[in-house]
Amino acid sequence: MKFVIVLACLLAVAFANEEADVLKSDSEVNVLDFNYAYELSNHIRAVQAGALKEHDNWVVSGEYEYVAPNGKTVKVVYTADETGYHPKVVEA
Image 1 (tube, rainbow, N blue to C red):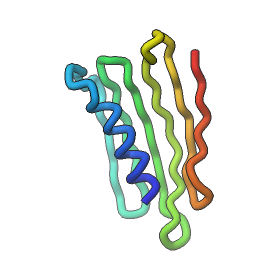
Image 2: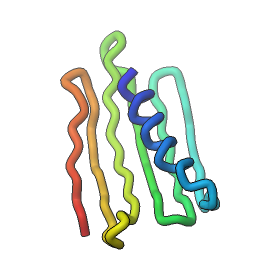
Image 3: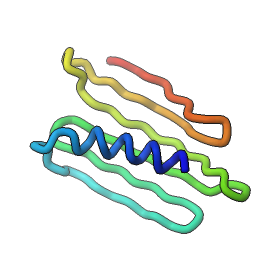
Image 4: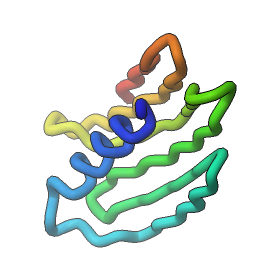
C-alpha cells in the first residue's frame, strides 16, 4: 500500500505541469516486485523499485528530483517499509 501512495505522490508532481514532455519512461511490474523511472522536460526525474517481503510487507526505495521555485535542484532519496517512509532531502 505504501508504494501506491508514494507512486501517486510522484505522479501528481509529474503531471502538475501539463507543458512538460516525457523524455524517458520505463517500468516493469511483476507480482513480487516492480521498478519504474521517468524523466520530464521540466527537470522532474524519478526512479523507484520495490519488492514484496514476508506476506504483505513491501520494501521500496527510490529518489526524485525537481527544480524548486528558487532555482535550486531538490533531490529526495527515500525508503519505505513496514516502519514507515524514510526520506532524506538534499538541496543543491
